[in-house]
Image (cartoon, rainbow, N blue to C red):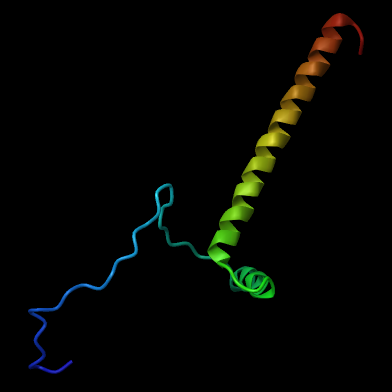
Length: 87
C-alpha cells in the first residue's frame, strides 16, 4: 500500500450471509482427519467437506439418541418383567 492510496470511496466486498440454522465457528481438527474428509469429497467428485463433517456429526448424535432410547426401553422392560415374576 502506498502513502497516497485513497480508500475514501472504497466499498466492502460481498459478505456471504450465514444460512438460517447455521452458526459459524472456528474449531481445530487434526490434519489427518481433515485430510480424510477432503479426500472423501474429492473421491466423490466434489462437494463440501464441511457439509460432510456436519452430516457425520448429525448421524453420530442421532445414533446415540437411538442407543440411549433402546437402553432405557430394555431397562424398563426388564423391570416390568421382574415385577410380574417372568424374569
